[in-house]
Length: 561
Image 1 (spheres, rainbow, N blue to C red):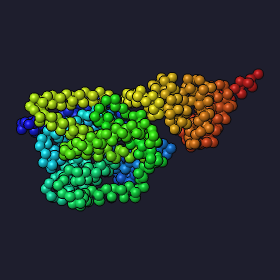
Image 2: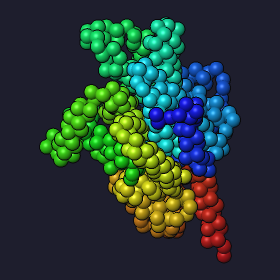
Image 3: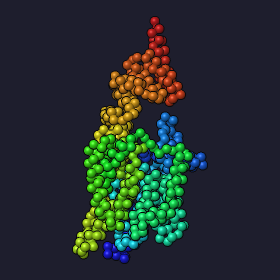
């Protein structure tokens, strides 16, 4: 026996305690990256509890909702339809405001709730399969789920707490489904479908629950029955979930929220999948050298080593998994590893920088914990001395995960740590260099700011804004020739009137500092021609007034006898 009768009631509490201790240091962390848009700059939207604003949250995509009060040229749409997440952000903002500590506390507590629900979801799964040591295996799986290093992104980063928020109704829906199946009561099936719908409205990856239940029915339950009988039962059991999924898709189409289709060829998606899967498996079973972003790019040829090397390794892993999957514990673990990851393999809508993230492994860590627990239990059953040693080894592994996760959390301390970690791993990373340029500029470390902006300008597709930033920094350093080169480049490539107006104004400053007052005035007039209603136009008018006063004084002085 791995758990004494006295310790059984503590089994669900241990993983929760580990999670709280492991992530407690994150309470002192700040806002990072998307947190700025989700919380700091979205205050006017999140504090608006009017019926119109709540309706807006349910009738548009998430980014459009958060950017409601942004200038028109700063807004962009997304393929994320997450109204329940928007409501969560509004409720959190009501008590936390822009206090990062309270937001991090909420994130940690959400993860703790997800951990305890995960324990009961796995426990009931094993009980429905009439498997022994279900409490022990559920405890190990939920401990790994609680403190696996890949969870640092989902818990230590406020914006990724949507994973915990989605996992809670997903796992609760699984528990209700298992109760419905065991007691043959439609009430629990109805509750399960409702919870699934709430999860779908929180984050799209909740669709994995439908696949998870399908795998439970086809590969775990009533294996003695024929495949035809199981398929019929599968369709009947999952009918409410299919109805909810269909309704969700219809609402998205009705609202005009697309599914993020991009021009990535289907072949490139297929060729890229092996390296993605292999990286995910490495991160879940060897969770070291984890990064906010990974140097993974689209693979476009079947003859590329980036395709056939990982593909061969995956085939070998699939053969090994097939041999081991005769055991129901292994099948359950493989289902939990692979199925929650499935939505993340649709990479067509994603930018190349966003192909892979640790947060996509949030629920897959449950499967890794199941494998670990079953391996320890199986080896321990061979002899009493080995059972004792396996307890020691299991404790060492969990302690090791705990230490690695605490260290991994530090990536998310603040924006400096986040972007410097990324840039050190991927020196020419577009966003990392752009954000480091901004941070150094805000701290008036101009040479470093220019350096990172220049790298970003070479790596990013949107170069005009970066060259504008470089030109502005050169202007601040009084390096007028270099500033003029950068700003002239922007003028040639900029499409928006506001950007052209800003360039004309900065060129006016360059001319003024060179003593070319007439040219400076002409450039200010250009600003008024291009964007007369913009904020920069007000600066241009002030500058023209200043230049006119200068002309008047000079004329007065020249007219003296």
